[in-house]
Length: 70
Image (tube, rainbow, N blue to C red; front, side, top):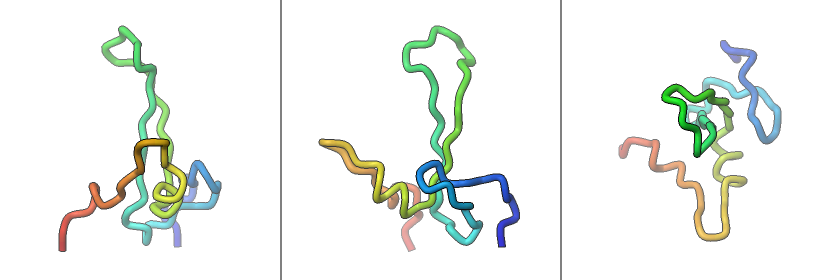
């Protein structure tokens, strides 16, 4: 059950359920803006979509950075 039905994954457009405890929010703003409070856009990703799709040539997204050790 989704308690925030308006939150969908940017990549797959499926709802992000609260059971996906490692889902992430990414904020994007103009890198070179001179504004102190530059406008931002927020993107939401399932944890699996983030791991599978956020990969660059020399860098890979690491979800475990956001998870406390057990």
